[in-house]
Image: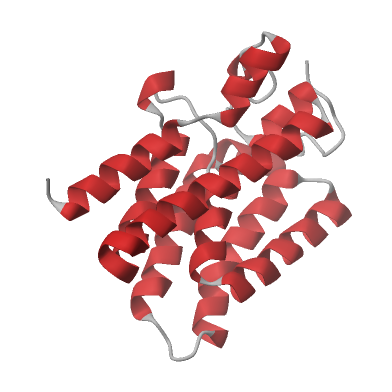
Length: 199
């Protein structure tokens, strides 16, 4: 099998493992996609199931990005990371085993970026958490953190890596696309805030 196809396939399958769905089913006998925002991601797991499960889902989703990136790096180096990073996020966002109804890819994208550019990813994540702490809007903090990554790559990554820049632009674009309903709710003042537990 072609190495590129193998990396894409295995990364997409890794992304398909939905910890929000699996933990919800196993521990709460509940499909997380039927409550809250309807997404199988960490934020909705937090709202529907509470802090403990939400944090576990967040960490497992990060781990997916790290594992896929490590596999891609082992096989094809940096190009492998790019392929793995994109496809693990696609697998998380549109999982074939859950009828393409997954999460929004923020934690998984974070895992990828922590693997490939740890300092910048960490700084952007901390800024994102700061925004969340101030505004109580998880979606806003998530999008700001994701959008800051390519900007910080341009400003601080030396020597400048154009491939890395384009890669982070792609991940940020996917994240914003998945948050389009959140953007609409933010603009209309109807977005749910952190701490609002949705049933």
